[in-house]
Image 1: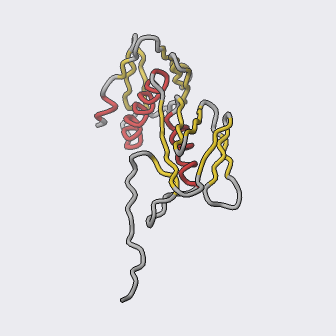
Image 2: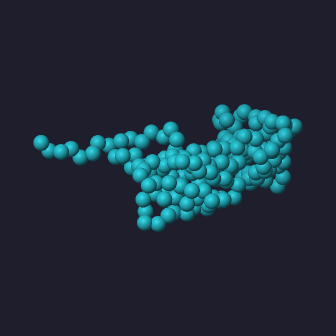
Length: 178
């Protein structure tokens, strides 16, 4: 039994949800998100409340019950508050520059690395800090992971791109023989 799947999802004011032909659409002040729901899960929409239940008595249906409820919760949070990931750049000469929906990263390579933000994701840069915002939690998280993957933090000096608050395990360097 899914503890998250059992709990109904309350829709705040100014948020509307529609469910037709297997597609859940949630509209809010920040935008609109849609997602196709599998047939293994029953979705009922009553007033301002979404409830999920397994459609069949199978292992897969019970497993997906809580997953789809979590997706719907993330959609509601996205259209009301939005999501945000913050990354830091550490290293001499390492920097990033946002230009519209494109980010240009200089991270010690012989060339700058350019990444294009997916639709609905915004990128902002300040001195040594990259901020990624959007309404889709998956798009924001994946784009942040793509940026971090350009130059992951190394364990000796901690140079690279990492999330704010991420703990980097440090290794001890070479010792001189006396």
